[in-house]
Amino acid sequence: MDERKFAVLSAIIEDYVVTQEPIGSKSLVERHSLKVSPATVRNEMAVLEDEGYIVQPHTSAGRIPTDKGYRTFVDRLNEVRPLSTAETRAITQVLEGAVDLDDVMQKTVKLLSQLTGQISLVQYPILSGSIVRHIDLVSINEKRIMIVLVANSGRLEQVTVEQDNEINLMEIDNLRQNLKKNITDKKFIEVPNILDGLASKISTQNSIIVKNILERIKLMVVEKSDQKVVVGGARNLAKLDTEFSKKLLPVLDEIEENVVVLKLLGEMVSEDDLFIRIGHENKVANLHAASVVSSGYFAGESLSKLGIVGPTRMDYPGTISAVRAVARYLGRILGSK
Picture 1 (tube, rainbow, N blue to C red):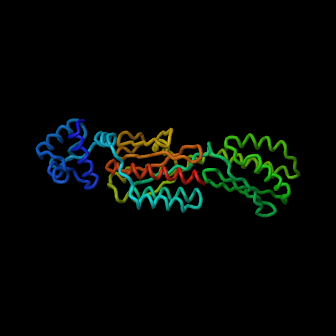
Picture 2 (picture 1 turned 45 degrees about the vertical axis):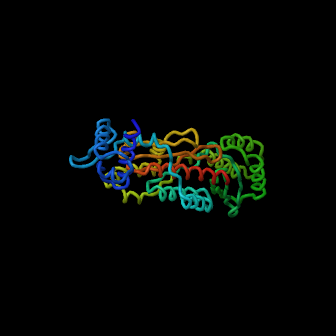
Picture 3 (picture 1 turned 60 degrees about the vertical axis):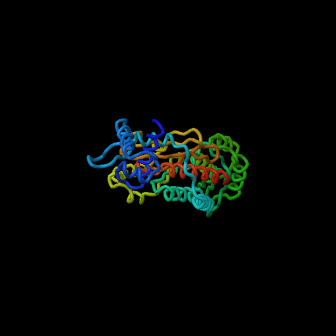
């Protein structure tokens, strides 16, 4: 596509995103510095329509972009609009003010929805590459012990173990010291084998409670919590097209159950990856009227994902900028915890 046709296509997309109305040649000339006559614009629009980049929804209407038109526009974006100073400051203040991982995730999903005006999705950090930063055993009463485990991603796990008989606190203190010595700073994937070796070395009177604690810690480090996803911005549906909202609602139910989220956010191998799926490029049912913009972020050594879902008629430069910035700041915040 030559530069003049692309300029006309870009102008149509920009105006359609703002007005939500089909765009005519006259309005394009009036609003944009295309430096050509309305007749030339009409000719270029006719070619764009013949080639499938725009379509006429009604007989007497102007033109609107197709999935092919949006894809060409996105692929040829030379610049991504930078966030304003206020937006950048808001991201920093919100994320740095979070108190724990759950708070970070909730604030991130809310922030991403506010910046983009779309439905936002944030995947919890993947645990497979996580490292044990802190492990402790806290006595609640004479029969109950709380296991406290903190990962390098900031994730906090707390589980209570109890037994019918009174617990020997000296025994628990001995186990605590052994755990701190042997699994602190170890990868989650290494912990089960370490605990198996530890169990064979520890001889105690209350072996049942020790065994239960060790088995529970194994479960804490192997559970698939990387599948957990936070969804935000559902209220933005009310601002979107009624038809689009109806199609997206059933998908939101699936997303909240984590059924389709990995397909939705895409496969990534580095935090620099940016996935954009437009309209019929989406393989998820009911999303052929939607676009998905997603990026990756690192928490420790593992790559997790975040992104937004919205109508194909979206502000792509602004959305891409927001998704990238939030992913970058989120990785930075979690990396410092």
